[in-house]
Image (tube, rainbow, N blue to C red; front, side):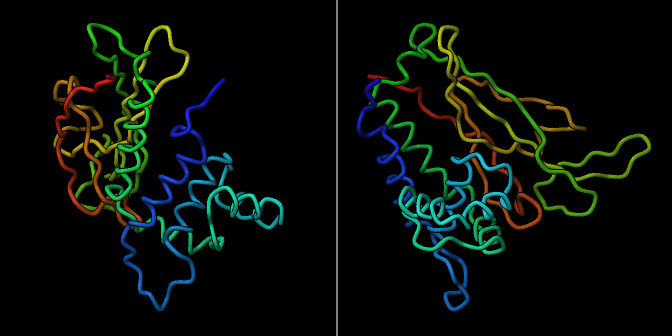
Length: 229
């Protein structure tokens, strides 16, 4: 199977590396041991290598061969330690990573990879699914959802919406960027109301340590229809 050059692993990795280089580092320069770029690329490598945990990833990096692969494949100069990786990645706003998804989408369009997903009159079939990814009785932020059962304590949580492009004849799906559900849209762990999914996708919001977000989420932002021409 021929892979177009702009969709190859090397090209996509280089595009991500360029985006990570442009993300502003809010850490104090005198207290930084590892570049933010290396931390973000290491986190990406952990997902690509499908390590079950950060600890497992760190242990595998003690192997000289594995360490060499990480530096060669992901352009990492120095592999960050466990704590440094957690703290640096946790401080990065999700909005800063959004350009990565935009570039990937543009390249898929350029390579006419989305043409196969055209479903009806040039439109696309999008499946939406919600999930809870954070819950706590103590940690909270202004963007938290709240829920209290009949006998249980008050809990703070965050829920996400995942949009996936599908087609009945395609074995693979095309996932979009995960985004949090805005607080007013969720009541008692149930989605109260959603805007029409056609032409709408959620806009990501920044997050901080502990609680996934320290500010109320924004509403859905309409986008123009995709074009594979």
